[in-house]
Image (tube, rainbow, N blue to C red; front, side, top):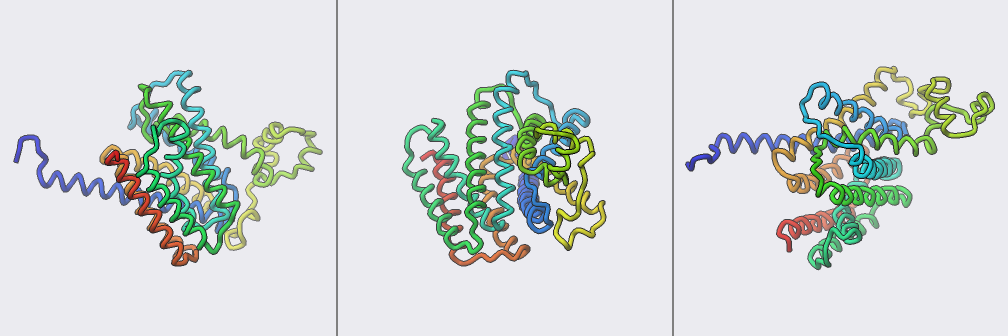
Length: 352
């Protein structure tokens, strides 16, 4: 054996560790998607912006714990100018991605959402052409994208519970995420700032929560807080969303109303409801940690390959757990889309 070459035992150990990490990511990522679907659709808490804000706040607090208290992850130095010009735009787009994507769960099945997510490589490529990141027309990439789009279209035509508004939300989420990825690349590629998933949460999650809060005040605040606009405005003579928000967080109109939930969950004790939201938020943070450690041990390409495997698993699991009906036409279309993704990744890898 050559000097410096890893032993067979070490090689097996490292690969088993990476395999375990990838399997953990598939399970946790898929579990979080199913968990979010349960909370938003089955549990009856139909407030996707509120759930997303909760994720961001908890993730930010846990990231601070890892970085500032436990010092497990090194904190990168960041000046105010970098934060304003790089982090805030990324946080705004991340807020859009999460809000629109979680809202789609109110209208679409998990199976169909995973099929629509197959459009992500196509969306990133087309947005890259607009931003000039993709230089020149690449026939092979474009051909792979046509295969992806054709497969997703075929699956869409076979979807029994098709929802136009849900599809619009999901496609808008994909577009927002494509913009976020490309703008992140443009803003950070020449920067000395190096962020991993945990330090990204440390800086981006708080500003993401702030942007989401603005949307929440308009779309969900009144319903969720059990606030009657008529009574609150008449009692306190409030005329703006900001004054209504201040009144709400003061506790005067704040309440958790079990009537917001579906009948079968209303009688559950309060600590069960707390556990549901706490475990859901912690799962979102753990997912980011797993991504961090997998990329350190393997590569981003490994994640791109593992992604479709997770999507396939979710399509089958959601049909079992939630009883989603997936017809053969959808399976065929999804299979064609996955083939297109494989071709696209191959073309990118070989730089054809």
